[in-house]
Length: 267
Image 1 (cartoon, rainbow, N blue to C red):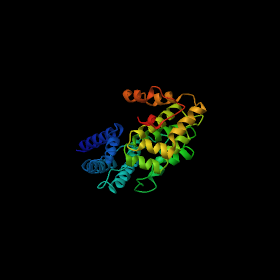
Image 2 (image 1 turned 120 degrees about the vertical axis):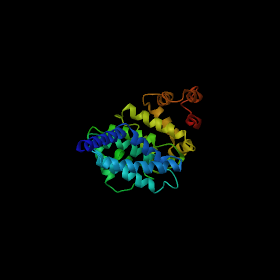
Image 3 (image 1 turned 180 degrees about the horizontal axis):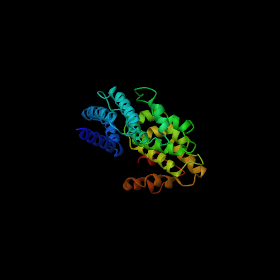
Image 4 (image 1 turned 60 degrees about the vertical axis):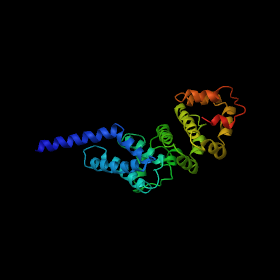
């Protein structure tokens, strides 16, 4: 009987590990931002159930992952019946899961510190954005890894006008455009900034917000004038390499970088 108990415990721990390392827990967290009320409620229930199993498992990093899941569920409960959890919040939580599963990850200290601040999060804020962009990294060589992780989850977290409103309110685009001219910025980071800009243009009202609130067209003209190493067309092509080529053709031919029009942003 003892062997049976040990076997069941081992199987349970293996299942927990598979759910976490296979990205299934992260995918479940993203459902908290579903437009469907029934899906959101199911997500809250299933995350809570999984968190309970996780806490009783032998998964090595269970405590911090459990804390994250518990806090995102408590945050979601405040709004689930009325509206989706802002996607940027679910994206942060889902991208934090693999970090908390690896104590050697460069962002492990920052995310742990964030979780220690309280059992619920402010749903209209962007977790760790200012910590990563304005404060020294947790490790001397970690700035670009931290920035890359931030941009990855910001890209995943921008899907709707409500998300766009949070990014505008928290000045996300201003912060990101301000780091563009960092001489030591890795090319991949710039690509992600551009992808985020283009993601914004796919959202209703996004292009107008970029133009009127953040002077995006003026910023692009300035980058071309500064000779940042690539033309406006090349900048656009780089970000759209993995995007719909038909939409690229609509604006890429005959673009005059000297007179940038708002139509360019209609991706």
